[in-house]
Image 1 (cartoon, rainbow, N blue to C red):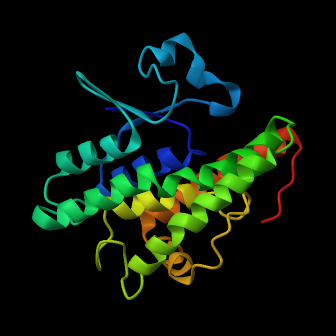
Image 2: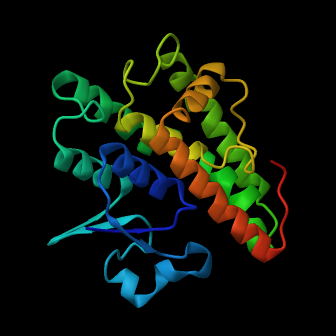
Amino acid sequence: MKHYMDPGSGSCRRVGATAQHLGIKPTEVFVDLLMGANRSPEYLAINPNGMVPSLVDGSVTLWEADVIMIHLAEKAGATPLWPAGAERQDVLRWMFWAAEHFRQGPPMFVEELYLKRFMGLAPDESRVAEGRRRIERFAPILDAQLGGRKFVAGNEVTLADFALAAPLSHMVRAKLPFDPYPNIMAWNARLHEIPAWRDTGVRLRARMDKAADAAGLRFDD
């Protein structure tokens, strides 16, 4: 099993955290996003979207982090990360909601206020404003859901938590405006008590610190 990934990617982080939490150890194949390796002919033959992560498991090739996470959970068998029955429907509901709504705003901040600095480009303030609008539209829904709950679907961490938390991976450096949402902030901190989420976060920061040093950039932590 091969996991094509860049540890600086939040989407790759959620796949990596899922694998680690389940005790699955795919072979990692580094796809350097900052050097454009995701656009190479060799990688496009695996994922024509030119995005990471991708997973090759025998004759099965998968794109899209959520699908890969589900594939790993089903290989592992019964696990609270991917519960059965009505609880699974709730997990899927929040995973789909993350993809359709919640994960739309934060990446605009990450791209404009963080990643563009690696390219020496100025941010597009209209996109930052749109990202803020989307966060302000959908963050209150998640914040309300997390009131009185340890995790989004109950008291056990599930794939939905990893799917929803991934876009917060560059919270500080991308200046994501989540301070007005105390339940989200507390939940995000609580997730870092889970070894798989904490460890992948450490890898993500180390990857981006190394890239920033190579580019001669400094960020306020």
